[in-house]
Image (cartoon, rainbow, N blue to C red):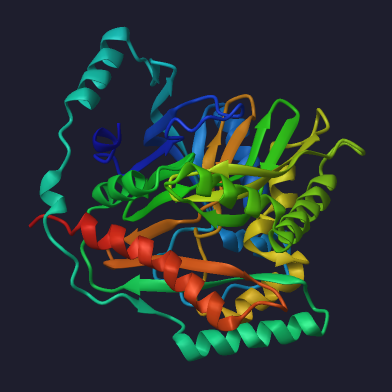
Length: 420
């Protein structure tokens, strides 16, 4: 599906990698080619999205970039460097839609016959993987907007804001980038997904801009009038020994610091949802759930709510965006601090990618553990971050950023560059 879809200038593949969850409906979803598109900057984007969905009355796929915060809170600004250039909001009505679930695939397109669908399926099955793109190694150095001393100074400055009571926690991020580089994004995605298969993996292309993503986190899902958000706070390494691994999971569950951070983001999500939900309907369905992934264990909580029947589908997206797990608390204060202390505009990173169905249901991930690439500018970027509290050790936070970056460096170096 991926190799077939990359012939189109606009496409989106969402793959749950067979991750078991009662909330998953499809194993994979592919939207390819665009009949119509919506591209909007922050300002009036959410009303435009609602109108676009109403007009098309079809599946639409796309993204909400982090900088839509400037529409949610008009006093905010985004003036930092942006080497990628994804728009604040982009959605498209796909010409071809493929839904994979439980050993069957549904294929839809305008005026599609059964023979046409079979031809598409056969083309996907016969599409060769571009192995030539995996042979070269990237030699350009990976650079960063914030060096060690700048990062340490920024963390200490944020801790002074926490001490003064401006905020409690800040999700602080640092960009890594490579200039003048040619990469083959499908190979990048395949490598990333092989090393770290995740339930919200995605390959996303909008003309010359690409995202490859191995996110473990759901931003929000809507089915009928029921919505859930599943923030992640709390991480532990894994161990191949089952006894030791179980001990790590138990330690994560009982870790007071991780619990405190998880409760804080759960409270933030509950508050955000309460602005759109029926009064009294916001519930924590699961608190401190421990879930295992390819590389780590995560602490995940599930917050649910019921929406009014006549409420626009964009209302709950606007009142909860950006997601609290990628900002900190309280949200407005920390978003101001993020802008003043980070050196890069986040753009699609820490935003959301997903789909909206014809009936107004939707499912969006959180764009983390992702690599972004601008093919025209030959600019590749990935960001890593951590939660800064008053008790954080700046040097350990720096080491955590380097550790997270190391995994993505491996993916980049081994995925290779475009074949001549």
